[in-house]
Length: 140
Image (tube, rainbow, N blue to C red):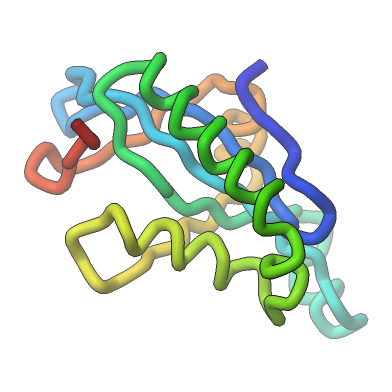
C-alpha cells in the first residue's frame, strides 16, 4: 500500500499516485496529501449527510515511482524534524500549501474535493491522477 498516515498534529495521509495526460499516456508520479473533511458542527454534518468527503493536494511532480517515494520520505522526515513548528499551525492545510507552493509554477494552490466512488477509488489505489501535459513539471 502506498499511503502513509501523518502525525496527529498534521491531519492527512500521503499518497503516491501515477499521473496521466488527457490522452491517458503516462506523465510521471505525484506525491499528494489527502485531508478528510470532518464535520465540525451539526450543521456541517447535516450538509455532508452520508457522503464522506476529502480534499487532496498534489505536493510533488516526479518523473518516476522511485523519485515519488523518495520525495514522500523526504516530506515525512521534514515533518518529524519540524513537529514543534507544525504543531503551532492553526490549520494543517497551511503546512501542505507551503510545501506545494515551493514546487508549483502557479501561485494558486488548488485542493481537489473527492467524494463517493471517486474517494473510494483514490483510497484503494484504483485511480490515476490526470494533468495537462503543459502543467506537468517533474523535479529533476
